[in-house]
Image (cartoon, rainbow, N blue to C red; front, side, top):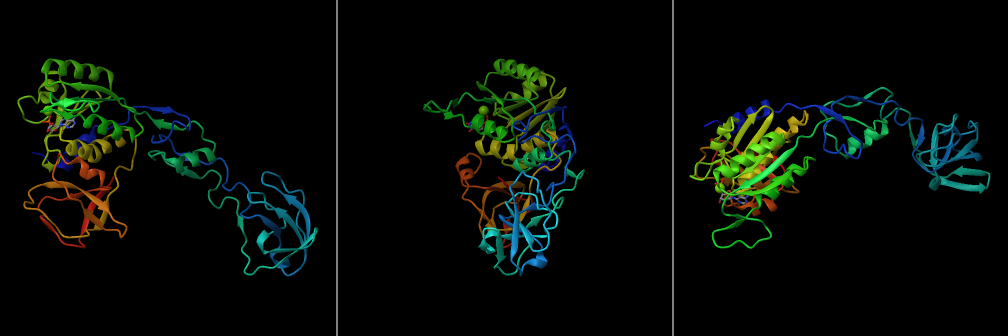
Length: 391
Ligand code: AMP
Ligand code: MG
């Protein structure tokens, strides 16, 4: 059986972006830039006052200053500030020629309506200088950057209203299992509620993709084959929950083979999620997620999400933290790589949560990270560094 790392490398090798499109700034969130962005202006675009106050010459601060004009944000100063003169200025307004400091309104005393005096100490310039944040023509964002709110601010600031981004794939979600009922129903004896469809859809939505949920399919080979065949023609990615392990009713691997899907990963030496399946056929991708709620949750977070990130053009995939563990962690056997739910504490340590195994999805409602315990390690002493993927 292959390792998790090998399985990740195989899936990643198929994650090639499929085309680009221009989107509006309201559509750009969570997409990845397919172009470098340069600024068409300097930022700030002019020497800008950082305070409400008076623009004057630093060398005149001991003297009474004559107020020669008032400059609001968005207006152009009419006069240049001379010796023992000042201009009343608002935050965000252009600093007039001749002035090299803006003294705060709070540090000023009015002698008469046309004259003021500086009463403060240790004056600061309070000027944001032209181009100090970004020079004209400077590269501000790179191809492969994920667009989050700060990037949207920059796109807007440089006038890029239709950024070129990588296309978002279409995703279908199916759950299989005769034991499943939808959440609105109270499960009868031997039944359980379908949580995976909604959990997987939510994880897909977190990537800015709106998936289509196609419902519960019974463990019936013919029906499942028909539905999967349809999704292969219609969607870029099909995510199937359940039916991928070795039980008599786990039909997913068999029907995929019949549909001429190339199965590239089926099973890996990891817990949870040992039976994960990945297949591809002519640029359509299928993930068979193990039905156990934690298995499908964790494998989406650590394997499917990075696949989708790369497929959507991102060059920075996954965040890993190495932090000290808050208390000793032991396990009976260290025979395989495992992932366990943890809390990242305020003290900057990693606290493993009480966790009963791959059906215990409730443990993940308390978690904000997934800790990796490598193969061969069965004891981690307090304070030793562990690898965590934040959730
Ligand atoms: P399977 O992978 O189909 O063998 O399912 C493994 C376990 O996961 C069984 O205990 C199932 O009842 C449970 N399970 C399967 N599908 C779901 C689902 N959609 N939501 C919640 N639990 C599920
Ligand atoms: Mg099943």
